[in-house]
Length: 418
Image 1 (cartoon, one colour):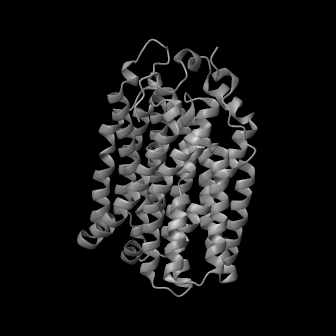
Image 2 (cartoon, helix red, strand yellow):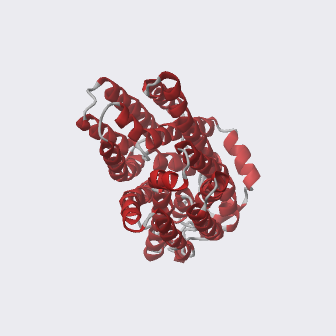
Image 3 (cartoon, one colour):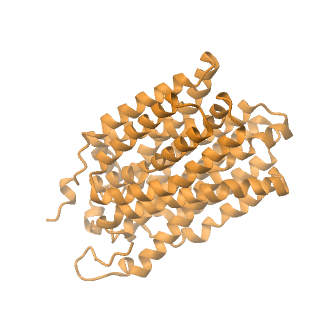
């Protein structure tokens, strides 16, 4: 993961020495692991909190839906600030907000306060500590030749956080109670702070294959106009909506689907664990694949494979083995889109405003997440079956495969050597 090529051509700089690059990559991975891992385990609190507070499941679910929405809305702003002031300040602010939101969630006694803390505040904290900001920081110090692999490693770290904190959170809840566990999560979220100081500043993008002079010639507003004028950026944004639709729907509703087909509830828990485990393999593998093959084609294959996996689930006998095989397959395809999508953004537009540009793409992802979660419940209430939302997921998978195929992922002319 090391890179010793200076962008000025005069030899390695401090920011491209192997030790520095490895340190930044490690810090970014830890931030991704903690931030993503804590967020992915918050569903564990649904049952104990609703019972303790005498809330409906809809009350808790709305809080997490609001959280996803604020995560999506906040990330473009976080990206702009990270690109302007560096990721350290942004992530420091996010870690504090994240901790406050979790603490507020622990003491919430009214639904409105829960929606404010677990929803809006925690969602904002997640946006400002997002693993995508850590990925952008990694991209600044890793050469273009190794960037895709590094982004895959960072995404895998986020997945590892899900694997670690889900069972750990459940163990804490069983041993200490849900309220005490949230306080423990507050302390864990604060450990992001020292790692944020390791990340490179605005001028630390010396390993990204784009000179600082070239980077300084473009403003954020110019970068945004350039991106929205690029057809590939629009198609990438549309396609990432589908990723959010799939992931959020299955995260929230797959355990309920398991019960719907007559299987015991622990099967749903094991399925989520399998998704997280195979997600590590898929994310890192996608990063490696992105170094050798066209990223747009790889993304098209992933989305089409998701559609095929869902078709297989619907036509196969609904046994525990079927669900486990489906979970493993979806795990391989789960966040494998992230290193490829971020890689295309960096490849086309450079790394200077990568956090900003990917933040907007990720907003589309979160709008898809909100849609998938909501439609999953609404369609089930209307038809008494999850089949309609599964059919929609298949159609969206095919659509995403189609829109990714024509993306022109070649770097813009301004990034070409003079």
